[in-house]
Length: 295
Image (tube, rainbow, N blue to C red):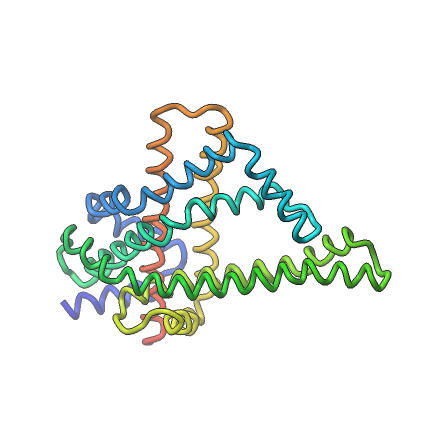
């Protein structure tokens, strides 16, 4: 078994992004029933919450408008409608994202680890082990969200303070200063945000695979572990986000046009499948990083 695991790790070390994509598909096809079960029972509540959020936005349009008015009163600048809708999605989807979604990710990580170590998959054991590691994943996710909120806070604070300073010095109007600061700081913020997301994805995998590594410690270890493969991680994150946005666009489009009864479960299944595939790719990437650092 140890020799088989070593051969697997050696082959993963040589993978690029395309090969990791193919390896993730191969892993899923080895045990489609188990992965499909995880998709239905653990991942589906998240897209269902997303579905409900789109339902609120399209059938209660006063909710995004109220959010825009509130932020205008607080900060002096109107919040774009797209951003206000994103906030509504986050609020509604947050409970399922820290419960069922984390349990699903833990089960996927355990399943891929068992496959690579030649252990037969047992659905009951996967669900039980995912429950045992959920608190560690929650702790790691807490630190990831905390860092994201700090980034958002600093970014929002600059958007509020700097335009007023420019206006008081007579450099430009507050509106022009707002868009100028947004344009200058937007790109560094997006880069930092993407980096935190990539490190967080790897840290959640480490929290499951390594018993004593979770929370802020797993984030630090993930940052160190992915050195030399950061570009691959960013490409993977980009592909995953494209998949999420495509399915979300389908949600939005069908809500606008009128959704049929059979389309709801289909869209939920599509989104759950993207979550499964994204998690499997992150586990494969984690093994690739470990092999890369062992060379």
